[in-house]
Image 1 (cartoon, protein in one colour):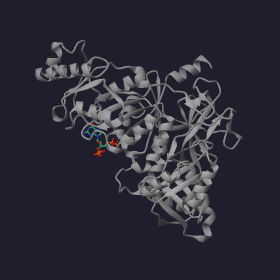
Image 2 (cartoon, rainbow, N blue to C red):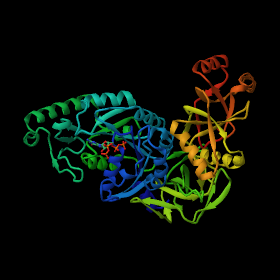
Image 3 (cartoon, rainbow, N blue to C red):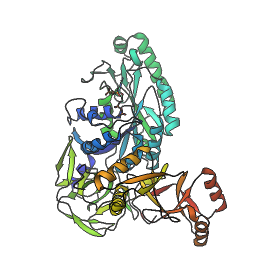
Image 4 (cartoon, rainbow, N blue to C red):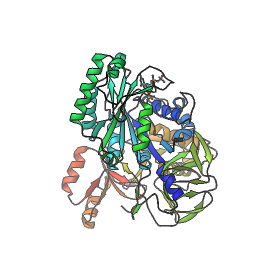
Amino acid sequence: MSDEINKEIERRRTFAIISHPDAGKTTLTEKLLLFGGAIHVAGAVKSNKIKKTATSDWMDIEKQRGISVATSVMGFNYGDYKINILDTPGHQDFAEDTFRTLTAVDSVIIVVDVAKGVETQTRRLMEVCRMRNTPVIIFVNKLDREGRDPFDILDELEQELKIGVRPLSWPINIGAKFKGVYNIYEHGLDLFTPSKQTVTERVEIDDVASPLVDELVGEADAAKLREDLELIEGVYPDFDVQEYLRGELAPVFFGSALNTFGVKELLDCFVKIAPSPRPVNAVEREVKPSEGAFTGFVFKIHANMDPNHRSCIAFVKVCSGKFERNVNYKHVRQGKMLRFAAPTAFMAQKKSIVDEAFPGDIVGIPDTGNFKIGDTLTSGEELHFKGLPSFSPEMFKYIENADPMKAKQLDKGIHQLMDEGVAQLFTNQFNGRKIIGTVGQLQFEVIQYRLLHEYGAQCRWEPLSLYKACWIDSDDAEALAAFKKRKHQFMATDKDGRDVFLADSNYVLQMAQSDFPKIRFRFTSELGTRDD
Ligand code: G4P
């Protein structure tokens, strides 16, 4: 691999910002884009945002889908670095989308609201990061508002997110009395002036004992700061980048995204310590970014808004080598060579055709149904990247055809939406009925709407009370056959033909587990690996 390509890999930082809705993810994203010169006014990202209340109008979501292609990947240069921020939907009904996006990032910034601490969505997303040992930086936001004691927040982060923490900046007061933060990482005092557009001045401090600190923040607050810092040095071990890179330790920054306060410090530290593209595991072997041959995988498929042209964009993360326009690559699942004439990249909120892309980059490939989530592209090698497990859905409904003349369209629509990863399809083996499983109520509405508008098919939902769908297998073929016979009314297959047991209550599931010890019950299924 040439030095030029290694240099490109080295300077890339591909990450996602994740948070519980309302903690400040959109605001922080926007401020990072401002620093990168990718946008020039605050509000540019915000206006693209999907409303996040549970009652949000799904028509809005429909409208937003089109716009959000532009914000799916936000690439920009910052100093010597090329930064790719992968957007994740704020609405929790689309958590599955977020999980998948996390397969394509090399690190993550978690935003936490100082008043609310760790919330449900943060906890769930962190679980996914932990599964993949993704390095995590935490930004505690909204210091300009009244909130919790920072030491309490640190304890909560450690306990709830099950990761070691190490503050690299420290607030001086909070809320109305908030005066700024002391940057432990760079030894400087950042003084707070509420402002949505301007960036704070930094006062370099060699030693926190300096009388300059008293002058700047007052004696009482200076004394408290020194006391806090002493405590931090005593309680928390020194920051070790390697621990961070292994996903064991999260550096913590404090600030206020809305006031652009603490954001530049976060970004400057981020580009220095965050990993460049990391090796990616395939079923066959580990793939290193510096390998010469191109490899990549599809982590997201975005349907086009135009119902007359059922085209999509498949988002491919480049894992190794150099991706080039108009070169033949192998679509491993289909076993055929494909060539892409109009791949797009996402820079400064603009989508444009690119000739080449490097590991860490995301390429958008216009597609008319060739791709499924988890598909691998290579220069020829028979390789299957491991996807992220698809989680057992939490809500289930029977899907019925409401227009007998359009059965074919319905079938096609359902299958394509499932390939896009909108929801999961199970077919009951006993009565042949189709079941859709989702993680949120909103998906049922989105599916119904899209089936009608993109495929001209009408569907009807019928209630189904299920507790869980679990993938089952066993090393003992007889035991498996016996289980399937006994539970034949509750056996289904997923879209790849794997056996799924539909448990209608926790009790039934527990009984099945104790009655059939030779059966493995799994609550996740790996996307993209069909032979697991
Ligand atoms: P999200 O993407 O994580 O859902 O959060 P978002 O950035 O939309 O922020 C949620 C709300 O919190 C917004 O207010 C935003 O202005 C506010 N916010 C973000 N950062 C800070 C901060 O540092 N300090 C304070 N005080 N507020 C902050 P909103 O009323 O929902 O939206 P808007 O009407 O202000 O646009």
